[in-house]
Length: 159
Image 1 (cartoon, helix red, strand yellow):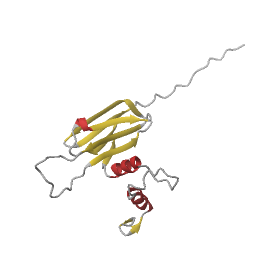
Image 2: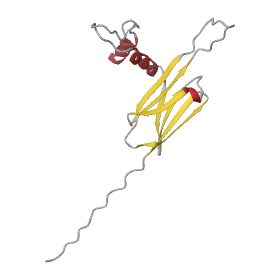
Image 3: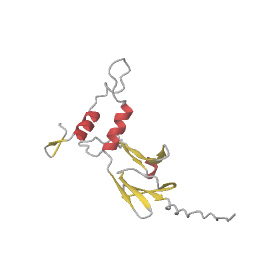
């Protein structure tokens, strides 16, 4: 598959496809040969590319809305890494029943992940998450705007 969108060549799509099409044998090769991305990097890149999300800026907060189909609140992780990176992740596993055999399996299984760099005015202490009907909404409140500094008045003394 080529890196084309609507018949036009797109270097970003080509780079993503190249990244996602690395066979397992090439990823993380320990020999002195050409080093490619590690398996964990490729797995995370695939998870981030396949996890849709919306980001909304509201008057008092930022809202991150992520589809997490089939996951309960115990299966979803929301963390802040490196002080300003919001990481939302989870994993959907196949339902194993001994008396059932899959005839067709089209629903996505595996890891779901998204990372967002939070803006400077995000309050790291006021983050909340709610999952309803397979849609996770993470709210990050904004810090109040800094008050304008008043000029310091210096009294002039006559000598």
